Image (cartoon, rainbow, N blue to C red; front, side):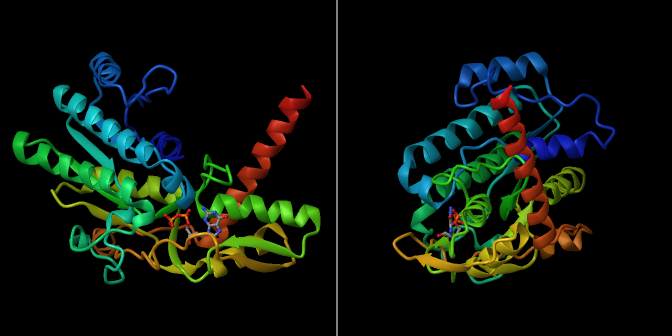
Length: 303
Ligand code: GDP
């Protein structure tokens, strides 16, 4: 999702050739494959967006995948990029790196000041290691490695598998199914009270290009939308976007996760960047892409 959005954004810039590491040719968790690929293509700049990602249930079900795969991906790419003497590398983390009870909105300095939210600690520990590794390359080898921390993302290319996805793709799919089945209620995991900050992936891609051009420092930088909503408010907006007229029910046997993770984006704002896509507009875009994907799949199935 993020890589494709970055490519869509980069084609509008005069950046020369855009190289992507194809999944079927390079397994980013395998050191030798990454070394060989980077040595062959010799990038000038690296955007490290690849990661093993998933929602609250996927993290609980596959802790090794989230910790091990992300450690391998970031260690392999940074080592190969350093060997290739790239002029810049941008590593992507996540807002879940911050302590569970960090003061809100969360400033960059909150990193490592408290205990993590247990439901996504595996992913968070890997991402914290990645931030520190980028910082270490900067310190030991003087390389321009930087890190950006995006908030919860959604948009075209998202994972729509109900057990492993994040909340927005799950609710979009469930609201469509509930609408089509004429159900009275849409089932939402947890209590509906946790707050989350969401950003459309096209806004993130725009921010990342801005950060690449304008930022060079050891400290990571937050990339957020600036406001958050409760999961119940999100579900009501999703229902409205897809035209589901029923009510909401809450499955409290499912975890809530962290109560709130709104990031402080003032550092990036002070540099002159701000997001453009509001939540409702962004959800409508994600829904349009989902409809197109479903139509393309059923067309392919008929053919
Ligand atoms: P998190 O931000 O790491 O907690 O990841 P998620 O996007 O998976 O979940 C965000 C919040 O949405 C949590 O409080 C979930 O319990 C809640 N949620 C409500 N319905 C769903 C659903 O159908 N799928 C997912 N993944 N989360 C849901």
